[in-house]
Amino acid sequence: MTQSALIRRVRGRRPRLLDLFCCAGGAAVGYARAGFEVDGCDIAPRPRYPFPYHQGDALTYLADLIATGRIGRYAVVHASPPCQAGCALTVGTNASQGWGREHVQLIPALRELLEATGLPYVIEQPSGRAPVRRDLCLCGEMFGLGVLRHRNFELGGWTTRQPAHRPHRGRVRGWRHGRFYDGPYVAAYGSGGGKATVAEMQAAMGIAWTDVREELTEAIPPAYTQWLGAAFLTSRTEVAA
Image 1 (tube, rainbow, N blue to C red):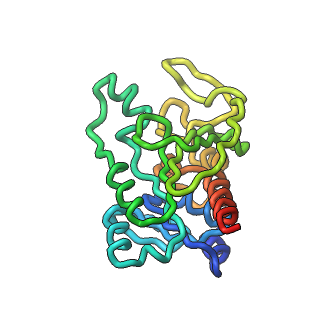
Image 2 (cartoon, rainbow, N blue to C red):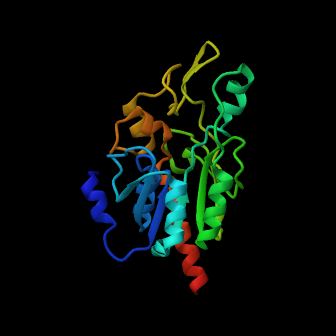
């Protein structure tokens, strides 16, 4: 789907969602398909982001929206802060080998601001030791995707059910400690050791509007947030009833 077609789909009177740390819009497209208008914010240029976009520091931007009252235009906030400080690779292999560098943990400050908005919110993080509540865990197999890509979600101010975690059909394809394993899922991260090609990542996650490897490796599949967005709208309808 083209960028202009994605924008046309979310014009009109729909609830508005703020997408912080938005990268190229994996989460945003899912929310749009669920029925939201979406505005993004990321510190890096994101010319492929398919919706209105503000370039800048996400925490500073959120604080300004709160201070000026403009946060009131939104119904909900989604945030996918950088995960390096708590992801499984950093706290596991990298830490044990003394690799990498110090990473700033943004989640406590982010949560404080999200609570100050008075709005429902979602914080998304990979599996690992990031300081988020694991109110939900979603996996590609739940949606018939070609990636596993487990992601934890903290839900602030609203709740929904945890969908059943389907058994995996095999391994993630690639090299592990000098041995190659085949399997039904591709490794949509990194660049060596049998990792997926750009085309494989696009197909496995359902992302066609960017072909930038870094953006694909950081993205979550739109199927996740399409399910989350629908669940949120259902929860609001139930509260109103």
